[in-house]
Length: 156
Image (cartoon, rainbow, N blue to C red; front, side, top):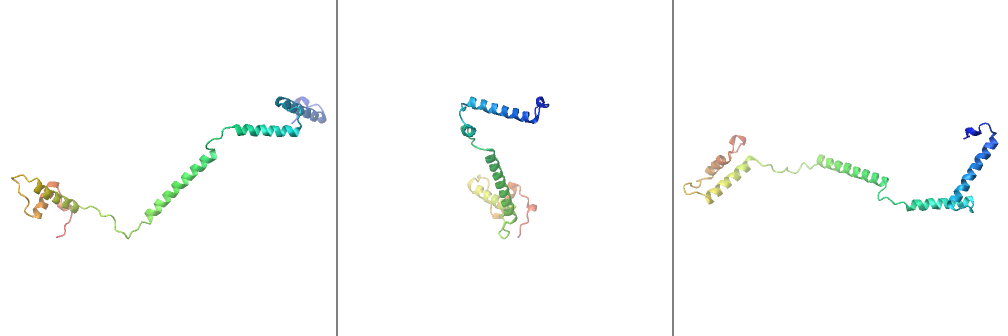
């Protein structure tokens, strides 16, 4: 790259001036660093050593950007894998086993009968008598809990 100030000078002189500027810059550099008696090879070596020491003196981060990105991608992979396993598990559920028994109104009715029979034995006031039969206990339980017989078909 030529300087516009030297546009009218011959190319040989321009190259010579650029070389002199570079040498002057190098001499200043050697003086600033105390390396004025060293050769170009020595100065390059000393400069590289100084740069290496400066880099080594920098604090090392606990996590680099690469570590953070790697951890993020690993977490994403695990999440995707868990979702895939969950989907596979739900699609391939064993259908030969019986499903969980669902509660029906008969379960509630049995509980109500047992509750009324227990109450009738333990907390019977003197004027009320115990039910004479299980049918009467069931009827009392239905009255007590408001059980609707049309919701459930009971085989006889």
